[in-house]
Length: 143
Image 1 (cartoon, helix red, strand yellow):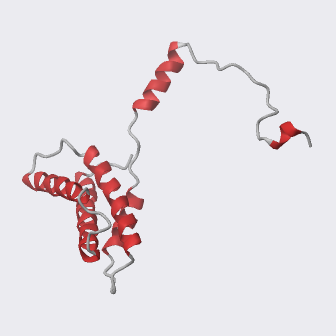
Image 2 (cartoon, rainbow, N blue to C red):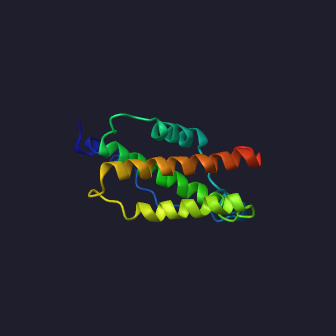
Image 3 (cartoon, rainbow, N blue to C red):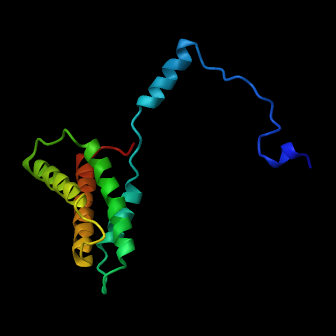
């Protein structure tokens, strides 16, 4: 075996990069970049269900922190999707709760008592579930 074969791709011929220059290909690329990504409601629902399962004794702190981080990301994604939809008072209250919880997540760290971290995780899960319900109530088809 030669030394070039030990490094993957080292035996490939070096070619200069070629960029698309025709307008049709560039328009297709721009359209693909501007297309919103689909929201994976199955993953969000699974994470929410795991977080809302009542557990005695309290789960390990590492699991609570990881689930909180995941729920925080889900909630931020849903907020970006529904940021302007605050016409109804209930929707506006839900947005306020979500932003308050996300702000509160910034103050929690390793010194936070385990019960407080667990309650924050459950509050994030309930608010995230409410946003999923809002999506289902709107009757929008999954993208």
